[in-house]
Amino acid sequence: MGWLWAIIVGFVLGLIAKAVIPGKQHSPLWLTTICGMLGAIVGNAVARAVGVEETRGIDWSRHIFQLVAAIIIVAAVDALYMATLGKKKQQRA
Image 1 (tube, helix red, strand yellow):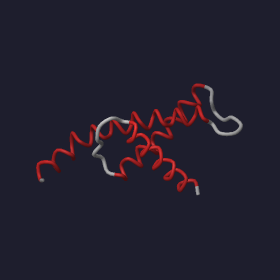
Image 2 (cartoon, one colour):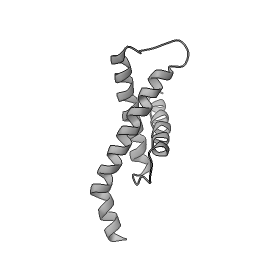
Image 3 (cartoon, one colour):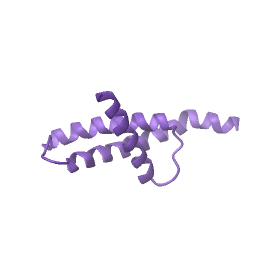
C-alpha cells in the first residue's frame, strides 16, 4: 500500500508542479509522476531537517516543502528532457 500512495502523491504533486511552472512543459506524464515522487522524498527530508517532522492533523508545512521540491525537480527535469530527447523528437516531426 505504501507504493500505491507514493505513486498517487507523486502524480498529484507532479501535476500541481506542472500547473505552477509558467510555460509549456514537454515531459511525459510518467516522468512528471516520478519527479513528483522525488519531490515528496526531498520535501520530507528538508522538512525533517528544519524540524517539522510530524504534527497533529494535516502537515501543511511538510506538504509545502514537498510541493516546492517537486516544482524545482519538475522544472529541472523538463529542461533536461528538452535538451536531450525533446530536440530529437522535434527534428523528426
